[in-house]
Length: 453
Image 1 (cartoon, rainbow, N blue to C red):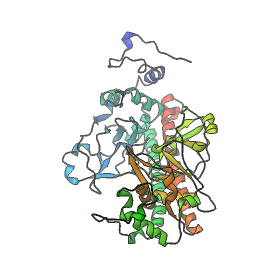
Image 2 (tube, helix red, strand yellow; image 1 turned 120 degrees about the vertical axis):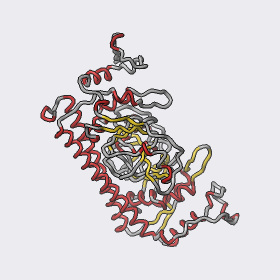
Image 3 (cartoon, rainbow, N blue to C red; image 1 turned 90 degrees about the vertical axis):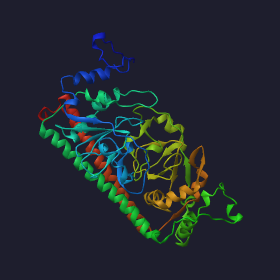
Image 4 (cartoon, rainbow, N blue to C red; image 1 turned 180 degrees about the vertical axis):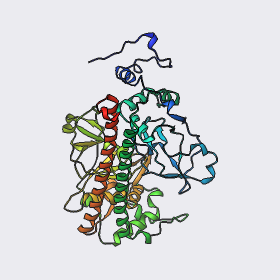
């Protein structure tokens, strides 16, 4: 059913926007709800657009906050980048202060907002972010409000630009900010602190699993240095789909020989009867079936909460795209080829054509263990070896079964899998707490919990 708004000329807000979308019924409803609240400018000292400089990252130095580190009300540092310390003088004003709120300024995830609680102690925001510096309001509470349906909708309402949306600081300054009591806002901050503790546990459990695996493989004994030149016999190039120098780098041969010497390694194809790419889905808002693309694959775990949806019709017609519980999803086209996450939910799901579905035979290997192996440096190096570049980096399905996978005792695999499960549960608890905080603020705004005001 069609919906529309009719507004008077006198009700136009004085911005450059006079399009119908800007004055949509939902936006007008939210604006009316917040009309009696003070604007953001009354609660902040500044909204900073960080200085841009040439980005040359190094192994260590000063940490840079990337837009992709900003999630829905938390900072995800599964990807960390650093710049040399001599750039500090150029980006001094970009340094975050405890209680800052950071927002993704542009791009696909524009408007995503999170709270900086002072850890890591020294970090500088990149120019793809905005930094909101509160003066008389909790950053945790402000960030939580901006992640509610009302807050996020109004932030996105103010985006400008068509090809790549941007958020304007001046628009943010005028947003009405509802307040609760000091006690209420402190309670919201405590919930965020609890959530962060669970995120830390989740990361710790997963990294422990990864470190156990790498120790078991004795990778510290391997030399991955590269000579300036190398050669291979012609016979070694026969029967493979690639004959470029990158494919035959000596470090790959050393790794594969090392795995083969364990006597416990097998080609992935021998333990995974199903290895196929997904299919491009038909998206359906609020559908019954989850849709995962390559962007949902995380450094450690699958970002289930960001999944889009399709319907049962697509599920039934496209068996190849179906994702079952314990399937491993492999990032196969794009920037992070080789990432591998195990799907641990019971809910129906499908995946796109940029992701490979690996279905492990549970009688031959533990799927959660196999996921950690493929997602570790051991798996990612093999993905690098087989990645081809024809316009865009791609890992072809026919090459995935050639990966060697180390298969230790069932007991060791179970230990790894148990740590992955603990990691998954801790992350799920962390996300539930963030949802709790958001719902608490939403109810306060709507007057559901009068005691909180």
